Length: 483
Ligand code: NAP
Image (cartoon, rainbow, N blue to C red):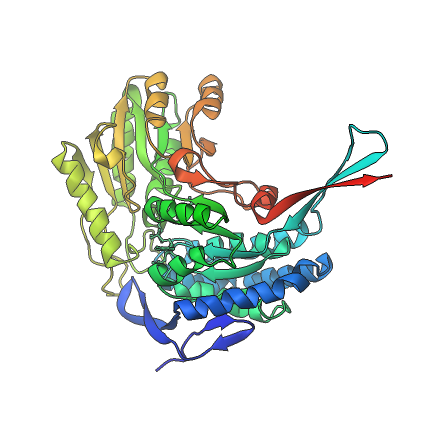
């Protein structure tokens, strides 16, 4: 029996929980470890510890905070291969993608080690003579962070790092499917010199820990990434409890391909953003909106590229596409292929469960990437998020129709266009209703030092990451002084 991975509360690893196994979706016989399942009483302990730690931490010097964040970032970067391997083993993205995500987590901590030294205010003349006005930013208190399974270390990192940098205390509830990376990150934070109670990890079910967290009176703000349904319920609870809230949720991201696009580039960026990381990215392109002149060549190009991809164990060298994360997600992905078929679309490639291709003989949740054509904007496959390796092609007449279809969705996270036309690229950047717009680049794949987030049904509240993270993790104070 392996050593249990416990919750980290008030500077201690808390024994006495029930445990749940963390399973490898590439190989169902591989148990990664046993992880604690917290309860509402433990969540309460964690929030109280964070409340007690807040006065000292929020007024601590910025040098100590910067040093701690820098130390965490350095250790993540030094251990990126090991952490990336663990991440791939529990989530199913390929090892290269896992190492890339771990690297990003380290870079984020390094970035915010600098950001906490740069938190500026303003001095503004008063409209009344003889009075000075200062605008400063202060921490908000104890923040509750709820994260999804698809980026098990980067998303916790991009919430924890700014929260701590700006003087808040943290209670993290990671996704139950992937506790391993969050636990490893917590273990690194536990040795960083941050005082007891400032950072707490409570693993367990969303319906138990997540629910208790968003309702706890000691939590001042909640940052959530996950599905639209859960996000809406969290927003309602936060409004009731008078908490600041930030939601990053689903997408139905459009990738426009115009007749004048570089065909090879358009095929490659579409395959990358629709199917890599098994399509399990909120920024994945799931609607490929293609003009008539290039449509057939584009579809043939994507089919040819898909035929050459290796689907298999995430840890095996040479794997291009790892498994879907879970049985439930696999069933959802397969069911959407059937829904598309039943509504009149054509499945051009993939869409079925397959055996591992890369030789480990593992039994996992493998699925052949599905390319669907002859689909129309009103079909469910083009309106609802699948969150797997499934993309549908919508044929359009021209740029104007492509833009209209792009914006014909309740979501607004990322939108891309492949074109050689400066006029159309410029117009698209301005008129695509999305938080992030890509020209001749995949809709997935973003920098860590600039704002991340969407519009419409995809997001709610201030942006995450980069300098803009301070909008959520601080509150503004205006001070007047009589000279
Ligand atoms: P999810 O089911 O909404 O879960 C997200 C988190 O919420 C998990 O930690 C979950 O815990 C927790 N949770 C579940 N029920 C809760 C409740 N009643 N109260 C409080 N917390 C609760 O989403 P997911 O399946 O993990 O992730 C996939 C979704 O995330 C997709 O829709 C994807 O688009 C979105 N996503 C968005 C972004 C973005 O930045 N826009 C980035 C990545 C992913 P348990 O897992 O333990 O139940």
